[in-house]
Image (cartoon, rainbow, N blue to C red; front, side, top):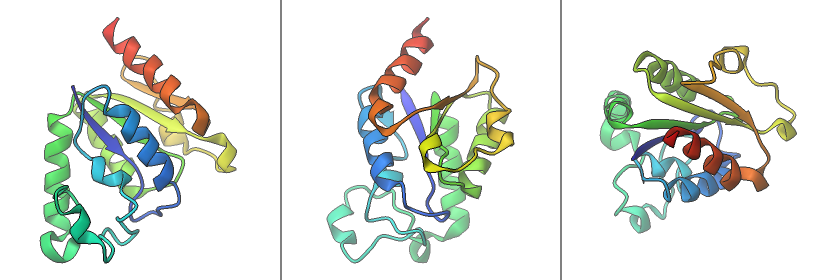
Length: 159
């Protein structure tokens, strides 16, 4: 199974530690096409920090100087098309994640959105209101529940 993971990059990297935990759990269900989103080396400018060389094997970073915004857009849409399922952490507001979700809906992908109410934020009505139970699911969770809620979601795909 190919999994497209969405998390904020330019919208803020405060939740990168949560993204890492989610991506680690997702890897037990298949190939995570966008594992770079969980890298602590990826800044909110979409670029790798000075330790970029230690992540050269990933070759999926958001290095705008090398590839440009259009190349990132096209690459990510290609990965989205290839994916079997989309998992998005939507606690940190992000225009990019919202765009990816809109495109995924248009592609009729199975979508699972994770939101942490403990953040004090209120999830956008455009995300919360898109829930249709079958193809677009929004789940409130806490950090300690990541593995459990992912297991429940992926188990429901098999039924």
